[in-house]
Image 1 (cartoon, rainbow, N blue to C red):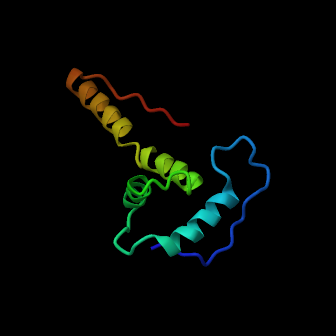
Image 2 (cartoon, one colour; image 1 turned 90 degrees about the horizontal axis):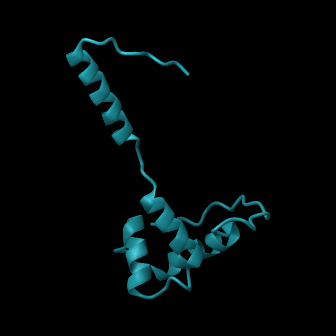
Length: 101
């Protein structure tokens, strides 16, 4: 469940942002009083907002959840590609080139 213990540390210069920090904080505090206990994950919260047509009531939260749920969590695909490259180079007998940044 969402906790409302911490005070926000949000700068006031957010004119070029899709999300207003203080507005998001207020929406989260309000949501804690409205949302049922059965809604526990971020995806459940987004579904709850859409099923109950609350996107306009919680616009910052809706945008933040959509961003958070679409950003990849890992770089597994890049790691798999590099692993396949190493495997192909081993099969072809070519040494793996090491890059250090």
